[in-house]
Amino acid sequence: MYVLGIWDGHDAGACIVEDGKIKVAINEERLTRKKLDIKFPDKSINTCLNYLDLKPTDITIIASCGTQLTRILARSFSSLDKEFYNFRRRLIPKPKFERTRRFIKYYFARFNTPSLKKFTEFQLKKRLNKLGFKDYKIYVVDHHFAHAASAIFTSGFDKCLCITLDGVGDGLSGSVNTFEDGKLERISSLSEKDSLGMMFEEVTTILGFRELEDEGKIMAMADYSYPIPDEKNPLINFFETNSLQIKAKHSTIQRFKELEKVKWNTPIERFAYMAQRALEKNMLQLFQNAIDETGIKNVCWSGGVASNIKANRIIRLESGLKKWFVFPQMGDGGLAVGAALYIDYLLDGTKPYKINDVYMGPEFDDESIIGELKKCHEVKWEKRSDIPELMAELISKGNYVFWYQGRLEYGPRALGNRSIVAPAHSEEVKELLNLYVKKREWFQPFCPSMLEKECKKILEDYDSLPDRFMTMGYMSKKELRENLKSVIHVDGSMRPQMVGDENIPYYKLIEEVMKMTGYGIILNTSFNIHGEPIVCTPKDALETMVKTKTRWMAMGNFFIELKT
Image (cartoon, rainbow, N blue to C red):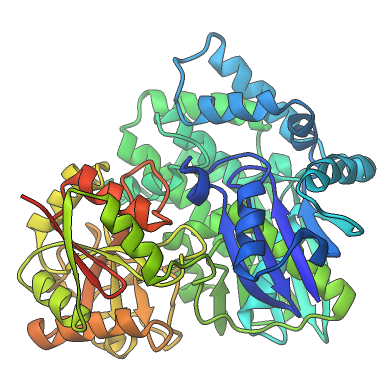
């Protein structure tokens, strides 16, 4: 049974699930080249169908999300999405009454309108019918059930606790759920007003960054502050967590005003620290309470807040959980998969399975690659049988290279198929990447990919549960940090990808680096310029190579060099 999952909001995308397994998934941004694109995902739908050689008429079940009033209005007036996208990404001059407009958005986001589910189905069918879909049934799934399903049904846990936390979706900011004896049950709902995610979004905005995109920068900046005691942190009292509920002291709009007051006489890095600490404290308490009250110690989680790897680390170490899993596409970009898995569960009794990789997007054969290489006159190229060895030698000599292989990753992280890779020890190459290639803020750390067999050697808090997806924070061993300068944060922490046999070419690359340097670890950052989506096609990769004046790239079995 095929289920097409679609999401037409922030970070739109599509997927196809067959018999409870994700067969293909992609987000619209990779195809439109508009970061976190918000639109009906027609390109994603066609890409998924084409990958499996299906026609629209082969699909009889479609799942989606979004009965929130703002989404219903945007479907009816497409200009609203365009205006919000340009406003959020700062692609237009600062509008008059910007603050008022933001408060209007906060006000309308609180309204969920499940009574308009039939109208939502009608809106989606209009777009689907234009793509050639016929004789199908469409299901509209609650936002946080979709987040929960994405984590539960890819975790491999037969019995688990699942917590979802984000800004707001269908009137809620989070949920606590159990999955036991094949039954998914919500045991607590967190209201829009009580949103930790919205608080973090507001802090992001007040510090001059882009909400729904730059929250990770706040997390990174927090480590540059001197720690302050909780009793001197005014943001701690903005929330109170009891049992399975988080309660906010202020309304969303009033909280924004209170945060502005705190920021007025607070250094930016300390303000970031205050927000990060308030998030960590309340998240940890919620997880501890849920584990204690349910007695379930295998825990999975999803939603945009689950991208905060610092908070995830504290939960992993201090909540009392036994096994953990964070869905790799944790934000709204994963709703298409969540909706599809949830409907497959309702209709066909889907059982959880453990995903070992997220190489779920399209791939391009040699013929397609050669076609693009012939069009790009700025490069020279040759086919090689020793690509891992050749690129490892370049990395070991202190260079960075582009690495383009196989199927596109699903989710926000490049995991060895669309990656920029470099040595783990070189501060010089780190600065080069930050300032001239990625063009990011200086305080953002890069992350490593390491061989799974090296984890105990490099990490002081490894728990023998390999994280393939860069969803968790860890602390490096102090005695090794001199050799890890380009892949650790200022406090020695890191967000590693632990590589096993799920990606043989990438494993071989890192293994070759280990032979030359003694350490099975490299810097791995996403193959894109900051503010752009990760590259999808060979054409995208070559254009980025030329634009950044990068000298070397491996694309499949082709070694590509920029002409000088």
